[in-house]
Structure formats: C-alpha cells, structure tokens
Image 1 (cartoon, rainbow, N blue to C red):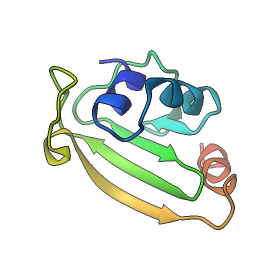
Image 2 (cartoon, one colour):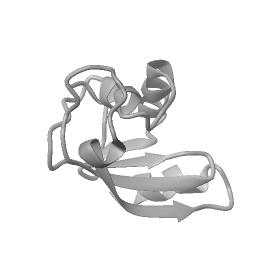
Image 3 (cartoon, one colour):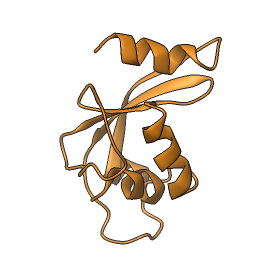
Image 4 (cartoon, one colour):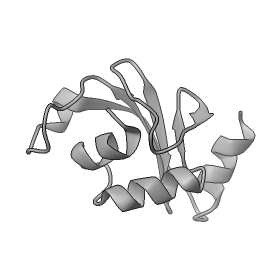
Length: 98
C-alpha cells in the first residue's frame, strides 16, 4: 500500500494531502530513509513521523484492506514517541541522523 494512503487509512494523519506534504518536506522516514508518498509500505517496516510538536516512530503490523474503522493495534505499534520544543527540531534531527 502507498505510504500516503497507509498514513490516512491508519488515521495517523487526517488527510492524504497532509501525508503527501509531510513526505515532500522530509518529515516521514521509512526504515530510516526519507520516503516519497508513493513508497510501498509492508509489515515489518519502521515509519517515523515528525509532527510539529512531537516525533512518532511506529512499526507496521498490517495493511488495512479498506478505508474502514480498524483498531490501531491491528495496523501499527508505536515504538517511540518524543515531544519536541520547536516544531522544526523533530524533522531536522531525523534528517541529520541519516
């Protein structure tokens, strides 16, 4: 499944356009590398999202079949969640650690 669609379907972001924008800004990493919106996501992948005030790292557990309400526990597991003081710090740290 495409990364932008996965983020929307799993309800990690509200809209697919937001997921695309985050990817374009370099705020989404898949397995430690910057990812494009069309990147295929599969179970076992690690996805890091840098939001404005926090950074979240998840492990993909499954791919939802459709865009219906699915329990988050079935789709992903949060491995790390960090709060940041400055909105740009989270994604800059992720980009510099590559």
